[in-house]
Image (cartoon, rainbow, N blue to C red; front, top):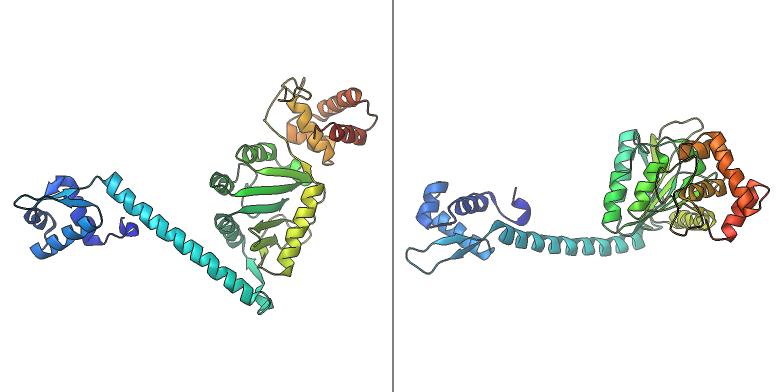
Amino acid sequence: MLESVGLGAQDQEVYHALVRRAQATVAEITHDCHLPATAARRTLQSLVGLGLATRSTGRPTRYVAVSPDSGLEALLRERERELDGVRTHIRALMDVYRANTRFAHPGELIEVVSGRDEVNHRWVQMQQDTRGQMRGFDRPPYAAPRQHAESNPIELHMLRRGVKYRVIYDTSVLDLPGWLEDVTAGMRHGEQARIHADLPMKLAVSDDRLAIIPLLRAGDSVVTASYLIHPSPLLDALVALFEALWERSVPVRLTAAGGDPATGSEPTTGGELTRDEERLLTLLASGATDKAAGRALGWSERTVQRHITKLMRRLGARTRFQVAMEATRRGWI
């Protein structure tokens, strides 16, 4: 168990025995661990060097266990510092590697991953290896089962670690049960979300170093193969495409879930819109149909139409397009 902080099997056995006694002589450790006296003494001295024990000055010499939450935590912090140094060295080596292989082996710049489980595994690994930000185009289908039935736990973990997520959702996700709750949960943890009609593909980019594009054919309902794009002009183009569409997409401001669909009476912080109206305007501006907006909000189409009519009167608009334009002009969306 403690090998990861540098303790061998004998070190662990002696330390456990010392912790049980709180303090012990070489003879007592020899008895407890069935070790030769020379081995027991050498191991105890090693524990002193590691900061897990101290040595008394009396006779016979007694060794006192250092509290595990102090001694072992210190070793753990030291290992973490060493690992951080290794990660820094790996990143430096990768910079050299990318610089020397960027054009040397073009056949290796695109990797094909096959099989639903393997695709999902690489997607999870890609997120876990991200240090700065994830960018993505999100649209069905998905490799992971029930991917939008609950929040992506890997994303939430990475957000807590400080990794930025910027995601553009295709309007087709509005047809998925639970999409609204999923996105809201991510946004509460820091995800930046926007919505756009007719995204050209599914895409995820990690730190400008790796992209994944599902390999889909017409009619596919699940992702069973994907391209992995390594550093190359193609990857640069995908990053540029994301940034261009990000600027043209509608920000999602789904600040809360629920609300009263009949009245939309829950106020926003600005006091100009109810939360229901804010959600609806975001969906309308993204091109959602009444049916899709109703499904996302948990409303009937008639309720959606009633809210749209109310907004049109309020904004002096004659069409849905004018509603979205006027709301944008006022800074509501």
